[in-house]
Image (cartoon, rainbow over all chains, first blue to last red; front, side, top):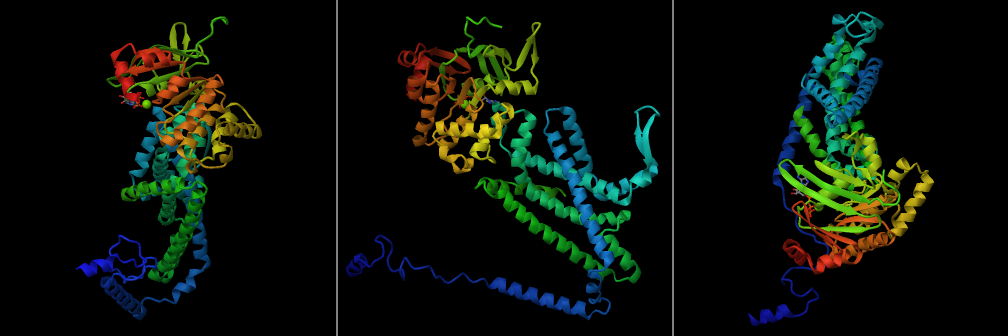
Length: 322
Length: 259
Ligand SMILES: Nc1ncnc2c1ncn2[C@@H]1O[C@H](COP(=O)(O)OP(=O)(O)OP(=O)(O)O)[C@@H](O)[C@H]1O
Ligand SMILES: [Mg+2]
């Protein structure tokens, strides 16, 4: 015992006070044996086997012709569909953004008329299926053969047009998708606005800035970085929901694929073609979104990243809602 | 309007009452702050100090009484014996004449120090960008932060942020400055820098209403000390007198505790 104690107290170059008997030098980089995860290896192996089996089954199936996929990937009809899908998504999203920001500000307004109008809009368009809304707008021409401006409660018409010339399938789709996503965007923007501290508004008011300017210069610029991740999510959703427009005869990606497989009956192969394009577009967009988020986060050291992290909460909520 | 011979008090509060629901927070406050005076308000937590201060620039509205800043009714216009609410733009214009400094600084987090300072004067005082930036740099020099013009608030210490907040308020050339516990959120070693800036302002003749727990500041800089408790003014007078011989037992007890 005594000899062991004296051995412990001899200076060995390691800092005193630590338990002795530890191997190696304290200053050396740690080279420990990692914890083994045999379960992961087994699961991985099983997964690979399953994938191989799936590939063999599909490849061996005479009915499924892989060769068709590259033939149609860059078919002019498909490319037109891709272009229309992009146009439909971008225009509907822009429309939805404008409506959404206005509705969000309306929801938070002191003005009860604005608050109730915005609330009713969100309630109606979030509470009904987007497919129903699309078909509704598409068929509006049946109920209202002409659209125009008349003085209310009179027959005096200021101008009018044929419904069918205005409510084209594409316009009906933009209207439907835009109004629908506007309701979701309103909630995203509202969450962003309320995430900006009350102190920011009070400081602006105390300086003498009017409510409007406070919103535009102080609140919205801080709400936007919070709203960008869920808005990106909304854009990706919109890319996919735009496929619903094929139901009202819009020749977007899914619609153009349908016209081809209704003739050659290569349904699954062409759906794979469409899926490849959808995946390519969503991947590309996710990349652009991450660039944008990084840009918004720059120069604000800490705040923006904290805000961005806080911004995830509404995203999860929103997913659950849909 | 008043005659030019009788100087108009900077702040005049008469029988101010204010409740949140059933909770009466201000129970008839009478106070007067003369131009150029530094009035320090102290009192236990929840006594209504912040609420009163926020009423002065209409961040809170009062339920009854009359509140004047430089002779103008705050938040209302009196016309044929009736009060009419001011429009939001008119309220904003009134507030622009009063500077306010908050316990938690409330700097605009997405703007640099300079942008924080120039935002209001560029818009409300119609300054050109160059003049506004020049003004900002002068004010930053004054609060000892000449080298932080391009920093973001998150890159500054609490004491530095508070000094920027003071510079931001001063950029509107206010005639009255309100301070709500400007040093309470600061580490002890940073308090001095902020108090020094406030002392400099007081020496320059600024009218100030300061809610604080810094009794040394109250004694050395204050022209009047007001003790509030339960929504009432229980004691007021020259700081040294109030601190040496408080008239009421409540005030004596409170002052003994914070001393
Ligand atoms: N927005 C509000 N809604 C409801 N009650 C409030 C509100 N603001 C303040 N109060 C109440 O009013 C009372 C006075 O609050 P106030 O903030 O004015 O006190 P204070 O003297 O500044 O206290 P402290 O020293 O803690 O800052 C407290 O009881 C508080 O709970
Ligand atoms: Mg307070």
